[in-house]
Image 1: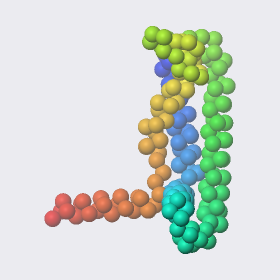
Image 2: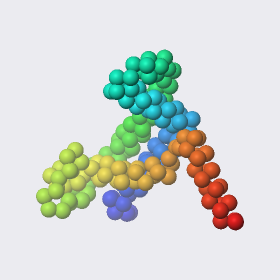
Image 3: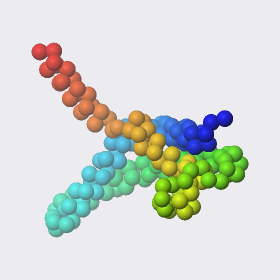
Image 4: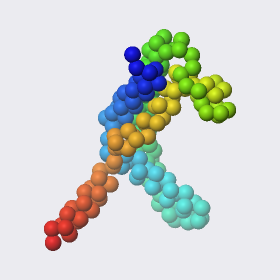
Length: 169
């Protein structure tokens, strides 16, 4: 009915929406805040080790168990998310293969341009187009579905409130 490239693009858009919605559901603002806190801790520990500040390193090492628990908790959710996303991707690929696998070349890339793992020479197959479409729509949708830590959201809200108060005056 439509051009296969357009149909595959719409399917990639639907897959991206599903995986981003799943990410937002699994990783809430508190998980993102914990991840940021753990990253700050690792950065501080690394800096103290580089400087040779034994007192600070010793102080930070006391908190190491707490941050290991946080990393394990959030890492578990990230692992679940990764396997769910891969499952969705392979399910859609299995559904697309019978529909578009016989179409062969969906597009021809300009000149002798080749994209490793995506194109066959300068020819783009349905799976290559699906991967490119998925990458293209996933970035902007990732920003739309972005999960922000509560601390950042509160800071942004406070900044917005201050702007509104200045406008009122």
